Image 1 (tube, rainbow, N blue to C red):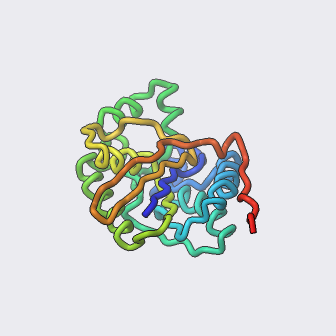
Image 2 (image 1 turned 45 degrees about the horizontal axis):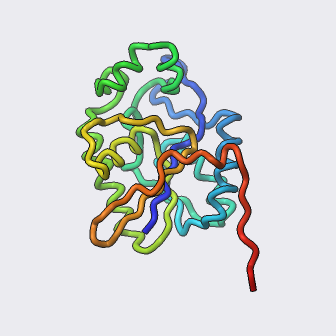
Amino acid sequence: MELLLVRHAQPLRVDEGGVDGVADPGLSAAGRAQAERLAAWLAVDAPDAVLTSPLRRARETAAPLADQLGLPVEVVDGLAEYDAAAGEYIPIEELRAAKDERWYATIEGRWADVGGVDPHEFQARVVPAVEALIARHPGRRVAVFTHGGVLNVYLAHVLGLDAALWYHPEYTSVTRVQAARTGQRSVVTLNETAHLYARREAPEDAS
């Protein structure tokens, strides 16, 4: 089967104290445009199923594709991000550009400092969740909408890497993984973003 692993589109920023309780932002205007472009692109591949993290930014990214294909959206709790319970959401690229201490805590694996969970505990949750959905969709193409941390730890598992965070998934980037019944997992593409710059059309029926 083929996994289309998608990072969510650009969300709104939520500063500390900006909301009561957990920060769960939806998409910005730019993020909604990214999600629409992604939907038009992936509709040509016609996924058989659409699954998403329970967090709003992932669900809103999945919605245009599901609507276009007329598919239901299945929410999978195990696809939530490591900081899902945090009271703020600052896009990681903003933290990196500002050389914010929270950026260093994130890349150094000190996720508890940014409202997250231990990287090893997180990977131990994510990998079985992804493998379970693979088992439930043999021979199918499945679009999975999730988060940068989820992508990092699952792909690190597939590639045999020790680092929890080892690459930067772009907003609405697509990573394709082939999952064989034998248990073999192959990363076919990583961090595709062509849909943000180009358009594609389904080939005409030769018949």
